[in-house]
Image (cartoon, rainbow, N blue to C red):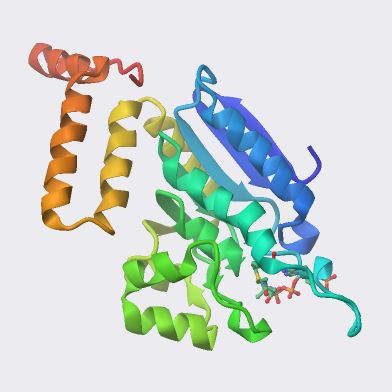
Length: 262
Ligand code: T3D
């Protein structure tokens, strides 16, 4: 793999976007490698119980590689809808539906689809020097990779509109204060803190965490009645897992639980 680094250790799959000289912006080849890695993460029997996504070098991801889009004035422009359909939408759908927690360690600037990719993850840590920029409006595009859906849900309509239209840079600390991410972390602690968090999550009741993810993601569109019904159904499923039995047994026996992830 040339554009990413990928390894699985102790139940944690770490996917590092690795085109640092282009701030890890996406090419078609990088999309393909990311797709293959995520297919392995989601494969039954892979043993992966948490995904950690990060970037190499000083940036997290600058979205689409624009050198792939610079065409001469008389040439036909590429069909961006096709690019979204083939590459960005499946990526966001996969991250949102993977049956395990997805931790994102934003190590530097996250721009365009790179910012919205981070917001599609479940728990986002960011280095204090990192920043989030929508970037789309300054080249005549609209926020994609779920940005028009996640931004208003994270920060409300007014701030979402401002970020999308004005292209203001949001620092990691501001992103934390606005509820866009879980936590801003000192730069030199980000990698260790993200790894520790991912390792911790990989020892927890994975099926239960996947059901939490499903329920919270569904709450964005469900009404209260639908959500109550969903909680009933998912709790029924959670109550049938081996980890629930183990959690209760360990609690009653006053010992540490040993979760299997199912
Ligand atoms: O096309 C489709 O398929 C549709 C989907 C679109 C999804 C999208 O993501 S559209 C949005 C694309 N991204 C952008 O518009 C962001 C462009 N980048 C920037 O605005 C800035 O680079 C940053 C604000 C992210 C960072 O600024 P700064 O000053 O820290 O770094 P820099 O000097 O601008 O960038 C460093 C290098 O990375 C530089 O190359 P050089 O001069 O050292 O040779 C720069 O050209 C390169 N780079 C940064 N972003 C991209 C990029 N090269 C190609 N594509 C990029 N997106």
